[in-house]
Length: 281
Image (cartoon, rainbow, N blue to C red):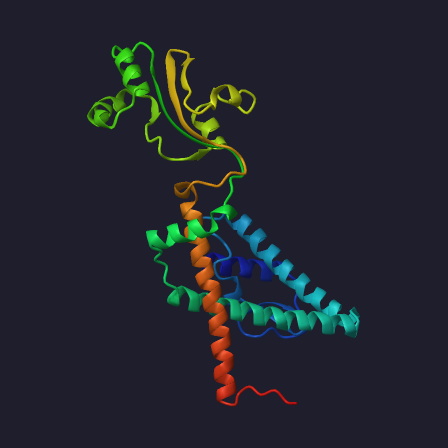
């Protein structure tokens, strides 16, 4: 703030005087509009040099002045019809802005955001045909490791003959991997596959993305081991686990819309009951 005030003093020295006496704390005037020191608070970032500060403050003041001059000219030159139409838009925007903010507060403090697993599954069962895939979904597991790893053959054998009983083995050996994802129960889309397995591209995907396919792909001194465990094509019903986050959002949005609809009805009914809202026949 001190820097801004110092800059204002400097601008006052280099600026022309005005015929009308300035109001206290005013730093600029356009017709009957005044710009005050308080309006410039926080304008100049800390550490800004004095020359740059002068530029920042002067640009702000010039912009303020041009806006005041333009609105004055607009009021003088726009037709009464246009001004009336814009004034109506402004009034409606104020109504929309206030009511939207108020309803958001009501929703935030009222809507129950807890969605049970039972509710999610019931909604999915009743609406699953509405949740179809936009592209291919894949379940897979993969490892990227040094091909000269002394236990490479053991790791490869256990990887392709994957068993839950080998959990201890994988916990012991994952530190040796350069990258890996062993949870093949999660569905993923193709962009994520391309990101994790860069040797697979849109052009060669049909060679690799095949249900049940085992892949060994050399990458310099490393080797990718990949197992495709599941595949769902485009426009198929999305699996529950994949669509679960979306289901929750849909349910919550439905609750919000129902709450808003009920709230609007209740507030109208109360106004009628209290004789604050009447319709004249």
